[in-house]
Image (cartoon, rainbow, N blue to C red; front, side):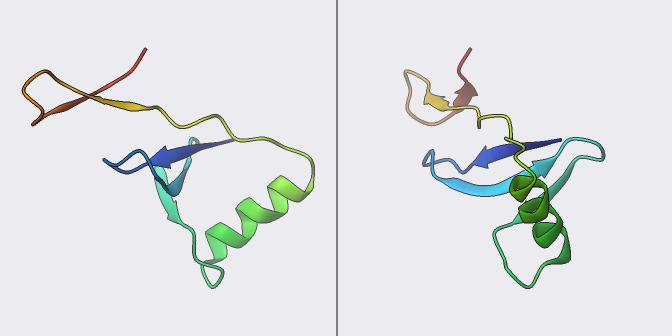
Length: 65
């Protein structure tokens, strides 16, 4: 299973392979990414990325619930 990952600008930046915690970049030459694409082609759907919300001071971020 996989989960999408956002960067600190809330833009998709990678895919997390949940089984081992590996972050997979969106790189067609990456074999892990190729496995992810094959998994998608089988009709699977990744978990959505967590949205990051700025704190009041604007400097730190937390995951939204």
